[in-house]
Structures are given as C-alpha cells and as structure tokens.
Amino acid sequence: MRLREFEGPMELLGKSKEELRILRIALGEPAFRGAQIYHALYAERKFDVGQITNLPVALRERLSKEARVTLPEVKQRFASADGSVRYLYALPEGEGKETSRPASVEAVFMPSEGRQTICISTQAGCAVDCHFCLTAQLGLIRNLTAGEIVAQVLLPLEEHKAQLAPPFEAQGKQTNIVLMGQGEPLLNFEPVMAAVRILLDPGGMGISPKHVTLSTSGIVPGIERLAQEKMRPKLAISLNASNDEQREELMPINKKYPLSMLMEACKNYPLRTWEHLTFEYVMLGGLNDAADDARRVVRLLAPLKSVKVNLIPWNPGELPYRESSPERIEEFRRILVDRGVPTFVRYSRGRDVMAACGQLALLQVQSSPLTTLRSAL
Ligand code: SF4
Image (cartoon, rainbow, N blue to C red; front, side, top):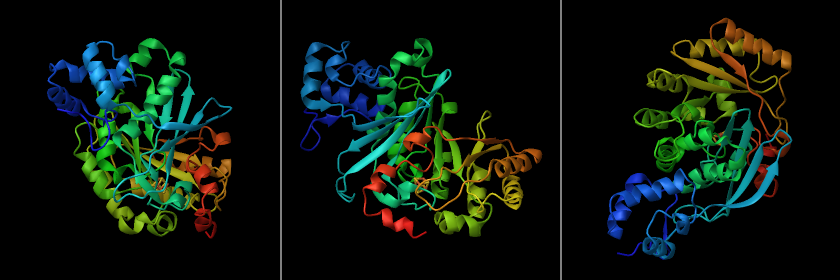
C-alpha cells in the first residue's frame, strides 16, 4: 500500500497515536513502529523522518519518499525587550470550502523564571468579531489543522531548547500553553482537540492539563462539548462585560449566547478537583471598569463553584478604546477580592512587538483593506 494522500506524500504532523498505529499496519510493520514515530515527532521533535534513527533504514527511506513533516514557514520573528518572541507563520492556502486568501498566524513564546508560556492560534483570522480585537478585522481566513496548531508549540520549543533545563524540558513540566492567539478554538473543535490530545498525552508532548488553557469567547455548545472530553485543557472565558447590553456592544456573539446561557454552561461545567474556571476581563477605560461593573461581575460569578478572574489592562493601539487608570483597576480588583473572588491583574507580555492580548493580527491588518472596517467604531 502507498501512503500518498491525494497527489502528495502523507502528512505526519498532527497525526494521532491511533492514526500512526493504522499507518504502521498499512506499512506491514510491527505494532511498536507507530508509537516510535509518534514519540519521535512530538516528544523528540524530529521533523525529518530520516532522523528517526531507531527505525530501520528501509522504513526511513520509504517514509522519506511517501510521507512528510510540514512545519509552517516562519515569515518573521519579533524579539521583545522582555524576552518574548512573536512568530509570524505563513501557512498554505485553504482548500475546498475554505477561503483561498493566503493565511498567516501568530504565536508568542514568553520565557520567564523556571518556565515558558506559548500562546498559539487555532484559526487564521476569526469570525467572532469582538470589537476590541484586531484579529476580528481579518474575518475568518481558514481553520488550522491539528498539525499546524501543534507546530506552533514544537517550533519555539526546539528553537529555545538550549535555554530549557533538561529534566523539566524533557518531561514538559515547565511549559504552559494558552490557546488565546488568533481564532475561536471552539469553532474549530476537532482539529483543536486533536492537537490538545497530542499536547497532553504523556507519550506525546507530555504537558500537564494544569498547564494548558483554552480561551473562548463563550461558544456555549462548544463548552458543553468540551465538558464531555476525557482529555481536556483548562477553560477560560473571555467575559469583558458585566451585563448583556455592554457585552453585546463589545462581543456580538453575546446576542447568540447571552450571559444567562453562558453562566448556566459554566455552572454545569465539570471541574476536576484541582481546577477552576478562569474569566478574562479586558479593562476598557470608561466602558466596563466602573465599581458597579465589578459588583455585577461578583453577582454573575456567585453561583459558580471555583473561579478566578484575570483583569487585563487594555493595550492602547489601533482601536478606539482607552486604558483604565491603575487606580481604577485596583479598585475593581479590590471589590472582587473583598467578595471572595480571587482576582489578578495580568499585564500582557511582548507589548513592544505587538504580541499583547488582542494585537495578534496587526501586521495583517495594517496591510489589509479590511483595516477600514473597524475604524468606523
Ligand atoms: S477575541 Fe478571540 S474570539 Fe474574539 S474576535 Fe478576537 S480572536 Fe476571535
């Protein structure tokens, strides 16, 4: 049997353990060959089948001809003064129903004492249209494949491996992944979950589920579906408002999934013993940062069991919003904390290279005619 998919060689990156098990059956190889390829790809980060030296030479030669490992092309790297690196990846055009606009996505590598965090994208562009987000201006270009999602983690880890302490790096203990780049992860559910399983699998990338967070704008059916998954990341909800009127203004998706529906899904979400739901709240000066907003957020979250809130100061830039003053942010935080809601202020990393929250599309937006769409806001 040949391994070719359609016209070209079979893509290995993004394949699950089970898919590689089927592949080794097709190859007429013993059972452990699939597991060897899986481990080499995701745990050892061998991106050339010729480098998988524990495979017999004949098999390596066959795989070199009939299979491939495609990494996205790094179009540009932007190094921040704070040590973060923002990657701009070029992706091939989509096929079939997807748009044929050229796609590029961003990921950000953020090293800090004893660990590193990688923020990755799940779609090129996004259809959700949150008004405070530059990615929204691109519209949805296309969904990413599982391989394209996993590659955004593999590449920076490989590039920075010299800086990572070997015992921890090998076990993936020091790596945090946040699915908070371009795109709404729950609107690209299958590829995102296929990538997450590889990230979390101890035989794959071996990252703890405590260290992988998926952030959603509040796609209720997606939250309900995620709740059924055996292997799943932590969940964060991008809240950003204290009532429906305000949230609809900022996030039109709230018309489809209003706060009552979203909070009900959160209430029913099965938390593991160590887990809490995180609510992200971008602080927009004069818009959602009043003391009354803080009190309403407390009331919204009151029925939920274990929550925490991250307040994200707004990054001034292209969009017509203001920063909240530090005093206002502190007052907001204090109101929540005094009523028993653990609340933290999270400053975005990589601000000088536009790698901060909501800015992961600036390069494309600046060179796109779509820029004008949001400037009317
Ligand atoms: S904030 Fe997230 S869900 Fe909303 S438009 Fe931007 S990328 Fe999409």
